[in-house]
Image 1 (cartoon, rainbow, N blue to C red):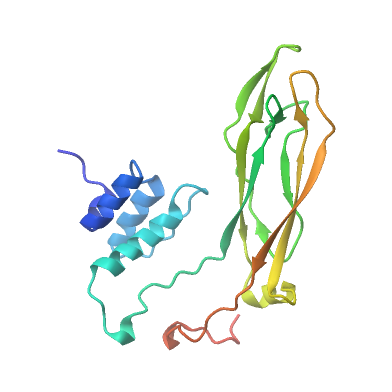
Image 2: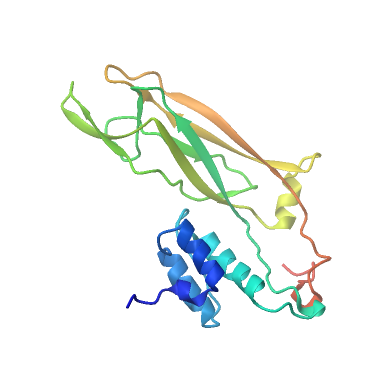
Length: 222
């Protein structure tokens, strides 16, 4: 008899969808769902790509879809607040080119710096698993990236009152960064490059009209 999993806490339709899309729940999903099902206040903290967003949304969506619709005054059952966003950089290298991964010695590794800004708090970047490349000319093995790879970096957007000062006339704010790297092939390394990157976000004020009064915080409070 198979061991029960956190998926057994969901409706049959939800279990069927998840099993068709993913092999098994991740650690944060398994632990988070059990905690929420037990009626506990639950903080799910895990690396980017581990499924924590789905862990929160999937439970809420299943409850909304499978439980009876409550009276109109009680229909705000889910409030999801997410100040965290992820920046991504997709890199495609030409054939036979490589860049060095972080942690390499005596070479220039790829590096991604977020410029100091009041519009975002940058978290450490997530680099993919590096390939080991043997450099026959110098009889050395080094960590590198080749072909296509992606860098991911979480940022935290500041509170509304601080962010509004950074919004431009068109209702947008930006986050700037610099990507530093040196591309090499099997014969030589080329000049180091510095590429400026910019992300533009659209600002939308918090909706204070559709939130029930008991959940609203007076605007005079910090």
